[in-house]
Length: 284
Image (cartoon, rainbow, N blue to C red; front, side, top):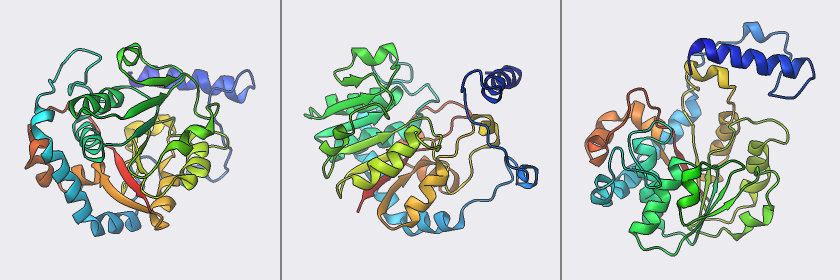
């Protein structure tokens, strides 16, 4: 989407919202907004920088897990046809996809519940197939892409706030809750539902993935128009001590690029400008 098209789209959605014609987003009046640091000016979160640094051994273990499945990852082509996974896309690129594949193969979960669907679903379904696992993968997505229907998974075609919350109670230790939702933390939103109702109720040992997390950094300036603020909920979650960080793609890509390039990840394709932004946690 070009910059002009983005601005025009945001203008149309904004006008409909502020005039009361139809809610197409959120407008929050704040008289001191002009004094706040703008996109690209917000500093990294020092507490998260230290926390991730303290978990270097855990992150290295996850990188090692990816290496364990190097041959399987290299067998996936850059442009393999749907519904199989492919590397030549920037929605769920290289390190994110490899980590998800390896997590599923290593954990052998009985259940995966994915909020959202797309390229991530294709990689996890491939991991289930390659490992001959008995994993049940359920995607909750009101408008899944057509390619997902061809996979051997269950699809709940509803927004997560309308789905039966009992589905999350089926997750046990070693199972996966995979979150790639709206990224908007507002009252009643899917982020509100997941972070403030679902996550606190999960059993110890459940693995949780959250996508589009740039921590310890802020969101990139080029994404400012999206209004994402999910990270503001993730920071206190991480510092609470209730969750063990297992992997952070953005941190590794920007702080330890040499370590990433040294293994199989250095042999996998990644489109120019793609952001690797997976965060993996375990419920303590």
